[in-house]
Image (cartoon, rainbow, N blue to C red; front, side, top):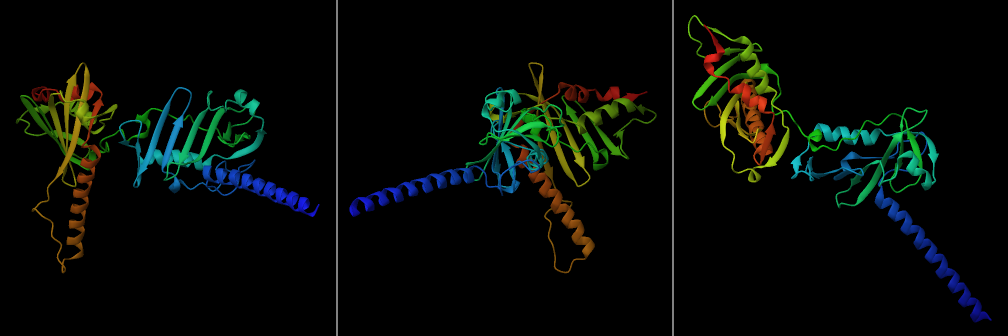
Length: 352
């Protein structure tokens, strides 16, 4: 009998160990999904203890669309579009949105209610998944319908059936990759530039930029420039926007026949070349920088003013290098209107 009792105790201990291991497995699985501090609840942030710096991958999907990002160094790339660089500003907005999602009340914990609230992953919900450095899912945020009678959306964690109402309406999550890139190639501020030179076979012209306006270079004596056309050209050049992105090797047969060069106050010269094919307009861009007297050398006994000047020159050089690194592999589709405006003949810029 004693042996039987020992055997039963042994089985009890094994059973208890199995239960403990089972609980640990669930806890570890939950911890692996989300590295937060605590669980969500009414009046709390959905992602408790969320640290955006720990996020190395983001996937946004719905039943019809999907877009994905991966962190490389200090910035994200859009892996669903050739790995094109995402705008730091746009990614910070997205991560900030996740940080600020706060619940005001619990709605249900019953999975059968998910469909009516729009929080099913394979339904109309928008799902934002975040991943760690090892590509393990940290959490998934499910955003459903606007709530009834409350200023918010139905929300839940993907691995939790409990649904809450968000404290505020969550703005629509966008899926177009162009919503996550820096569309403007230049600042658009005329005071940052000194000259625009346009070249097209066989014509060319240059516009000096002064006090926010443009002055046609080489204007014949007694002639007047067409201020409206000059203004249109400056506006089109400085507000050049990306419509689509391609890898250079995918569009090898383009003929670039129109070019403009934009000189910034820091002596950086930006070049944009245009090609047209099938009614669509493409552009490739680059930058160059040359110091006033060749190589910049810093001496020990230089004055503070001299060092400040050289520092600004070095920073300008670094900006040109960064611009080239960001754009050297890409071709951009732009609105054909940009090229059309630049193609204005120099003779039509003069009023006699």
